[in-house]
Image (cartoon, rainbow, N blue to C red; front, side):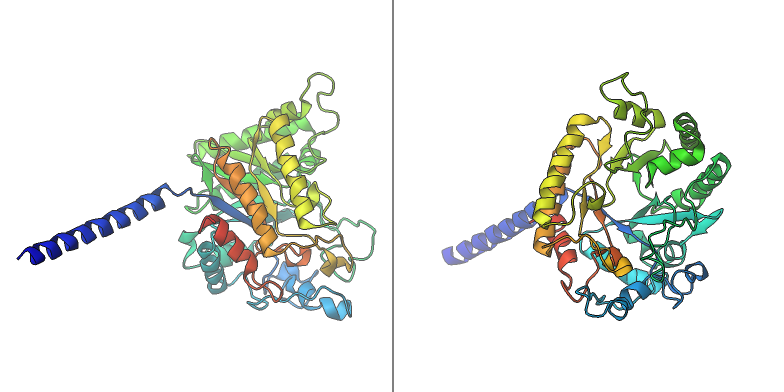
Amino acid sequence: MDSVKYCMAAAALCLLLGTGSAFAQRQADANRKKYDVAAYLYPAYASDDVRLRPFWPMGIGEWETVMTMQQRNPGHYWDRKPLWGYINEADPAVMSMEIEQATAHGVNVFIFDWYWYDGRPFMETTLDNGFLKAGNVGKMQFYLMWANHDVLNHWDTRLARVNESNVIWTGKVDRDEFEKICRRNIEKYFKHPQYYKIDGKPLFMVYDLPQLIAGLGGVAQTADALKWFKKEVKKAGFPGLELQFAMWSINLNYSGFDGGKTENPENDFIHTLGFTGTTHYQFAHFANVDQDYTAILEQVRNEWERIDATYDFTYYPHISVGWDNSPRTGHSAVVKNNTPENFAKGLRMAREYVDAHPDRAPLITINSWNEWTETSYLMPCNVFGYGYLEAVRKVFVDME
């Protein structure tokens, strides 16, 4: 009888311990830090977008540049191939697969490079026909980065080596066109349930700040236009607008703005324009990328420390996978030793930065999901397999 009581007591204890263990695991999961890991997505890998044909006549977008690299440059060391093949990212079935893979590995936001040239949008098919029509779009958030740079020769490999800086399309817009763009984006994208927001405010990023100012006619005119934009967003029912700009090493000292009147002209410049935050788009915009990846990470750490010490606007940490633009031009500065293991070191730096700034949204940006022709992509390839995606998973999902 005593043995039966003992067994029952032991069973009860095991059940209790098991329940406690399960409860502890649930508590650990609930307390686990959540990160918004946002990868830039370059929307040029689309089939049947007629506006892409002048640059890539094969009809598969910039996959043409990737596919023909060895043919154009026999014996060149760059010989990358996508494990998923030369997929059409404007196909919702394909994008559904990408969303599954991205979210399974910890990437939960896509930042779509978004273009406007010649009075109309450019390269929207990947977003409109692929992402937004994907059956599992509810798993992923997105926001727009207005890539408002000029279009030169670099997309067309037939002309990429011609160093003439010919402007095919300008990224500058005047006030009327700016308002048209903003109204359209508010209605078409900001109101989508998957659009990424901070405290309920849609996040919108501008790539080329000097270009925006030049098109709108100056700092004062740009500040007025952005003030109008914020009002329109509020009219649409949002509490406000999170305005983000891409930080470069050269874009904070604009035409001597307020020079000599303050110790921090860059702070005043950004506040006057109304931007609330910043991140980087690429290491190449501020670091010497023609060296070992670990040395670049030291530059990155120093830059983050400088930003924190110099500016009072919000910075969100950025990590690039690499840099090598040779598929377009045949030659390039090249990041060395950017293995998945070293990339993970950068991701841990970003995670630590977010943890050290708990008053901010836990947003981290990565270049990129698919910048194949700049050799800075998370998608699996013949060289590293799923290594870069696995690095993201280890740091932000497994929390290693």
